[in-house]
Length: 173
Image (tube, rainbow, N blue to C red):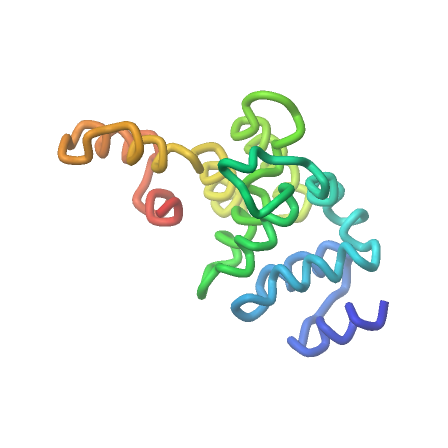
């Protein structure tokens, strides 16, 4: 599709393999990652590169938590909202709900799928650990904030221990 080529040429992208398209899309200027991923889906490349992401399209979500629609729509809205994010954080945003549609425990299943995807696309092992950790712990901060007394330091310490390091904790925020 010519629109895809135009999009990637506009950012001076060097694309030598299919997997490079997804990297370029996620490394696009602020707000453009969602558009790039949608273009990849529209022309059929996304199903070759990231079939697990295409599978999110049409997966329903509870409207009381996600009134924005299905998982794919929700993920694109998050990608649009990323401001000056690292490519690693963009990968985590793209894959954070990848486990939905696989039954209960979508955070753990998503982390497992995320590890497979990151490995397949050649992400750095440290970046892969960060992405999968963010997928696995994405709801922990919200749960603690909603269900605990925030004047008590114990839940905050527990969250810090659970997330493992300051970088991951910062990304969750």
